[in-house]
Length: 187
Ligand code: AP5
Ligand code: MG
Image (cartoon, rainbow, N blue to C red):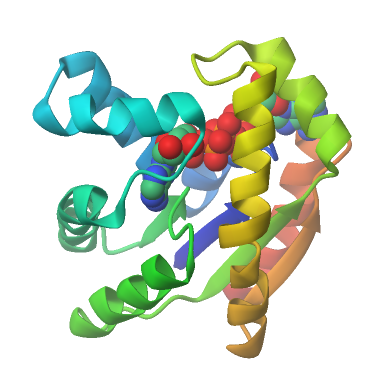
């Protein structure tokens, strides 16, 4: 199974990941986690990406493309059960690049899950978490970037017949149940 988790910052993509991995045996590529690992390791990519992440802006695509391509190719090779992308694609250029990468390895997407949560709830959640980019100013910018660049992907995937919208409020378990009922139907 090959899926994309789409959702604003703080919508719960990372939180739902373990349950999805456990049930469907997929591997995950979370571009935010990969980038934070580069920052902690002090790599060249990490150094160049950090100012964008601190501001809540997208890291330029030419910087992240190689990292994503490597991650995806490795996953496609090592795990025949498939993969789940969290935090990628983030805009139309990335979505088109993903389509091309997946066409090349003949592994098209099965579904895109859009986790929908309103912005006030998101700000509350993220201020309570306290990651390096969880201050009010950066959160507001991340939401603006989502609205401007990532939200158009909802339509993009709807047109391809891949989009499933999941209500992202309630307990973590409630949302997991909603996701399961969608994925069980396509697994
Ligand atoms: P990234 O790491 O992807 O962060 P994000 O999109 O801002 O999303 P988060 O990880 O904050 O939210 P989430 O949806 O995973 O929610 P979570 O489960 O943690 O990206 C960070 C930065 O990296 C970007 O700004 C950009 O600079 C760069 N970047 C990443 N990918 C890129 C790409 N492809 N191209 C360019 N740049 C890229 O939950 C949030 C909180 O809510 C937690 O505290 C959690 O416990 C809580 N919570 C979860 N579910 C519930 C619930 N049901 N009820 C109450 N609380 C809940
Ligand atoms: Mg996350």
